[in-house]
Length: 67
Image (cartoon, rainbow, N blue to C red):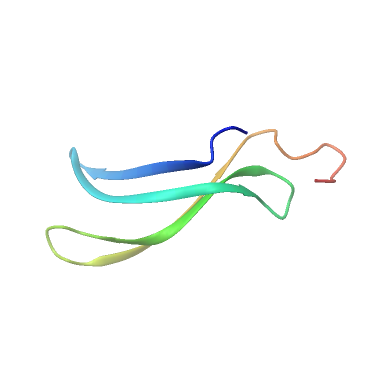
């Protein structure tokens, strides 16, 4: 996998609500993908939200169950 990070942008009606970075990860299951977590703030209300995201590459888990 050549991509090391993904930048996720959360939008509401084309207005950016928050940005989260997801880093490359190999999950305990052996699957590969990205994981990001952090906090974003609603620019209108100031309310804060905790965000987490798993992005798993379909078919990346080894067939024999070994990583």
